[in-house]
Length: 106
Image (tube, rainbow, N blue to C red; front, side, top):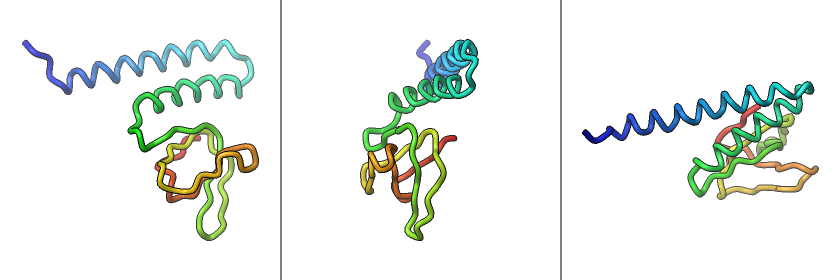
């Protein structure tokens, strides 16, 4: 009997969840909490980079600004699209306008 596509997707994401769990356990070897966080961010960034549509990009570290001049604090990961301004090296990090940001992860 042929496997249902939804069962295949469930198996796919369950496998990814198991990989995240293993990477989380491995990151516990770091005594420094920022090293732990960086290791976990890298794993999630890899997942996003492998699974996002081509017009999206996952970037590490940056800030978001809006048309009123508001500027966010440091954001760990952002998912941005390719249709808006991106200041890639402004202040050493990626800075994006809010309209170009699909989500922010901290």
